[in-house]
Image 1 (spheres, rainbow over the protein chains, first blue to last red):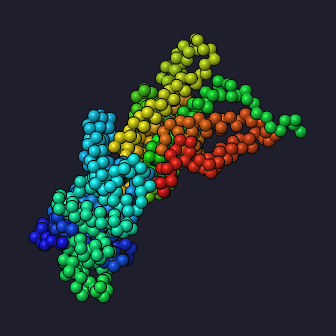
Image 2 (cartoon, one colour):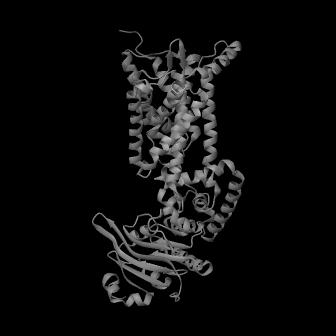
Length: 262
Length: 331
């Protein structure tokens, strides 16, 4: 399943990133790159710094050192919203469904280029705002259909099950028209059926739209079967990078994380 | 000792003067609380500084009229702009903080404003406050321009309704402002802009992750709230015909929060209803005669309002017009 993507252009290049919390170096000189159009898994034991690295890369925690280049542009110290607008969108380990907003509003919120998000346009260009809103609404309903959430469109997002929230968060991130998606434990806490659906979506988006994925995951079966490359972190550093079968047999990885081969 | 231990005079409740006072006060509080609703109910930023914005608006207007000699009609929009700029200035550093720290900063801001007004006597008249300037035989007051419009209008109304209360012109202007405010805020709340605000209320990080510059939206929310604070400050000044530091104590902000909680979060219409109920209760209690001293009766008014709020929290925590789902799901 995993295709050779080695010759793909690096869409995301991380070098020597350091993030300290007090005296703790949560990320301690980590570096890796993610090829455009690839599905890359980021694994490592708890506390390896995976989520912190996600936070640094997406602008949620400013880096104390190092460089993060997205599509050739340095984004290491740019604000989170600006990075998201550049096309690198993330989801969270604990889902961030906007609970007291309807599912449809969750989706429509994420759409880019809505002039109505500026107060000036709300007052001066109500026609353009309404026109864009109609487009966005249609796109949102289509995506909800794809993700099997269409009939939930008018329900509060807070009434969805854990798995449905994961799907909503992915669908919502897609509304932002990202070029790259960073998923923090997308499979955690969702049942196998929904999980398979989520993985199918990821593969389809990669295939059909050339979207790039980087995801943190603990389920080794998912990592081995659904990623082109695997990045292994331990104690704030990247200790191995390679195709799933290479990483599986890497002694350092086995020592740090995988334990005895299954 | 007394034959009647408890007596309520209901005459007050049929008195035009009583209701005029209650409604003007309620309207002034409705205007300032609409700003709180935008901040607390729709953006999730807890602003404890509304009294400060009222003071900045009121004082700026009066100083521009009395010291700079500007027309009242020009001074008002200028004072609104000053207050909004002040709100942005306060928000820029503090809106990056967590919600509870921001709340403390705004409370402190309002007190700094009040204490400055108390002490900058050359500009604000200190505790005496501002009303009129006397230069020889010439006297200028900040509300002259207002009176020159309001008084002829009142005369005209009294031509066919002799009992019309002198507060009627102010009452109409205040409630027209409340109505326009409710309509305008409901409109912008239903736009994509309003949707971003609600997203920030629900989860600011999620909004940032979707490309929203959340600081900008919170600043706009605060600036609009400051605008409403300034308007309400003008009305309070016209109502009291003076501007004094004591009129802007933190209790003003807390009354506004009382109005907010009564009306319910995330409902602009609820603000208007909450304001009328709270002030009817507060003022109506003046007419309850109890066999205790007047100061104690006065204290009892607050106890009653407290009791109403406690009962509300126990039986209808979302307030009169708030949505229960949003309250339960939001947490």
